[in-house]
Image 1 (cartoon, rainbow, N blue to C red):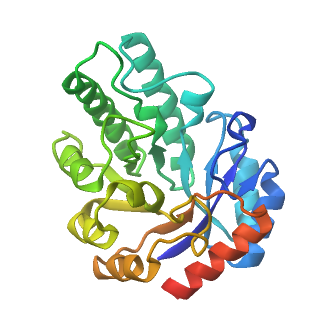
Image 2 (cartoon, rainbow, N blue to C red):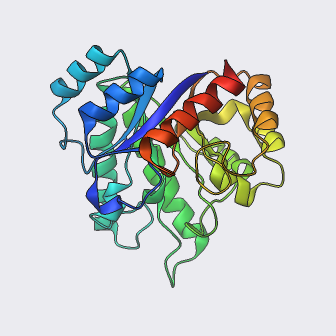
Length: 270
């Protein structure tokens, strides 16, 4: 397993759960000094960062790009894959496709979390799930063409009324035409929705392609009540060898949150 820390460069999501903010070069330098293996990046769009500059900074720091987030598509542009308007769904697919291409330049997959959307008033859930499946099928094939997977993240019930738990999500992606969508196991969301985090990990292990490392209160691991030793054991049992990425609040500060995260990662995985 490889350690990862989040960097957000989108002012509109300033209250969100990301460790580092605003300054890409300084954040990468700090992450490298602490010993992280990679970063997960949140940008306003696929063209918000010059790829050559990012490549240079990653080379200088020795870090990998683990994944790219797509949430700005919803926050800034109001785009989701389940909007009743087909024109908005098409724009959402185009936005994510651009993010897939951006991340694939660095071997990094894109994450679909908030851009999955919700079941809108007046829409049957089955219809919303068909729209979601259609979007994931299109985007999964585009990801394959770029040499990466697509990551789908089930969110807790307070953030979406589509799919909230890993088992349901695993069954859903198993029913897709594409074979290139994997699951994101976010420990914060799982703490709300799963009856047992370790059991859910064990039962869906073959589908898990990314892990978000955050405690029950969305603070860094060790500052809440998740039984992390049991979760770590389950991840080891399924042979998980991907990134364990800190999508957590910068509490009490970004620097201290990063230190807490890498210390916890080293405790459980090294």
